[in-house]
Image (cartoon, rainbow, N blue to C red; front, side):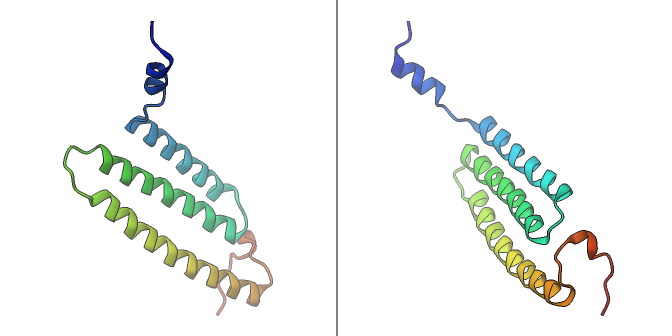
Length: 114
């Protein structure tokens, strides 16, 4: 019979499959939000959620790779930097669009006038 500690160690083992499943769920939630949301800020949040799912994949594959290098973690750091700049540009655009049009509803922003 298995002791409680052995069962606990067996039940709490997190493998690559768990990380990939978690990342796929996060990516699907972000994609669903990207397709259904109408505001500009929630759209940016959904894109960030999808980028974070990719970062989880990068770090998980790096952790379970047999070669001890830090390529996945470095790529995740670069991805976080790109995501931060994307948010800065997106929020600046949202402020400008709200100032010009009075709304940030994406359905009402179908025309690009100069």
